Length: 176
Image (cartoon, rainbow, N blue to C red; front, side, top):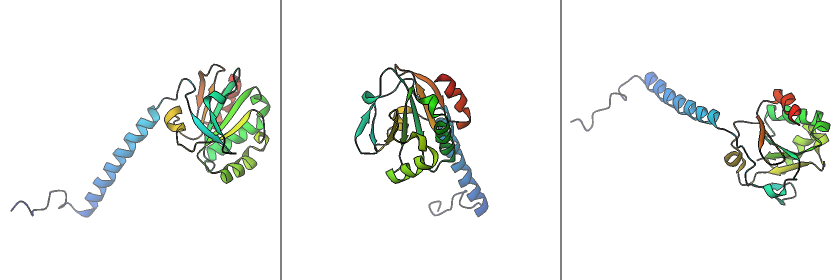
């Protein structure tokens, strides 16, 4: 008669069952966060395919040679991303000798609203390319840790600096 017998866990009071369930969920999410924190950004610009707002493709072969390239992976609703783009906007003259690639998963309307609000000096600049990641490849190819992810590459495509804290913008400006 052991077939219909409840297991030891099912005989526990309901509160303890819930605690065990949440503890297991905690362990899973904690483990995932450790993996994400240990993720190391790329050391060279990878092959990629993103799309400009006019829907034309933009790949790693389209990056201007002889210039540093600054990628910013952002989400329009992220307050840290808003602060980062606002800071880039304020310091735009220091970025003039670099190519800025603003990459997002957002739709065109959100992107335009975001730029009008936080980066108006970046709009229609020759060295600023706004890109949509329609194939969800930035995370897999560039290995960012969180939003905003800011990666500065040398003219030869080697990673000079990775930063995901907008408060560290002065360090990026020194590298420019």
